[in-house]
Image (cartoon, rainbow, N blue to C red; front, side):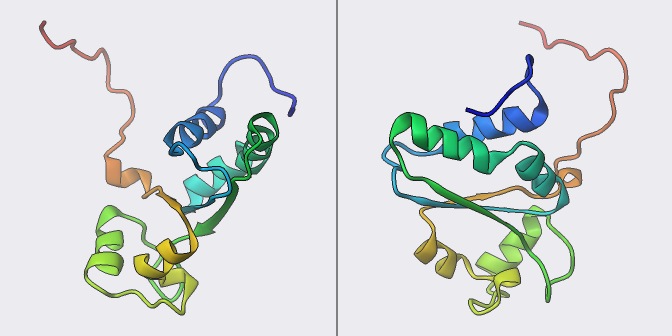
Amino acid sequence: MHNTRSGISLARLTVIIFLLLLPPGIAGQKVIFLHHSTGGNLYTQGDVEGWISDYNDENNTHIEISERAYPNSPYPWKNYPYDYWKLWVNGDCDAGQPGIECIESLVEQYQVIIFKHCFPGAAIQAESGSPERPAG
């Protein structure tokens, strides 16, 4: 088991969310996490591979997880929901290039595909004061 500090960090919370999103019966399944810089930091700093390894040991499973910067060259360094639509729905992908791989070829290789688009796409902003609670 990996040494942990008390409290929960954002990276640790991300790993917990990964585990919660895994469907039942995933033992022996392959998972890929597609991301850009923030997702890569969460994956690395959160030691997702270590957590999955521990999960496998504790639950007698064999989940394989990997990560990839996506979309990537030859696609511009953009990672917004529109970019996934453009590649996977609009057909601007290429199954032979990992940086712009098509969803069809990804699902042939992986049973679970997790993607994290860039946080500006979620309109996350700095705290602006005291939020109002909705009535009710």
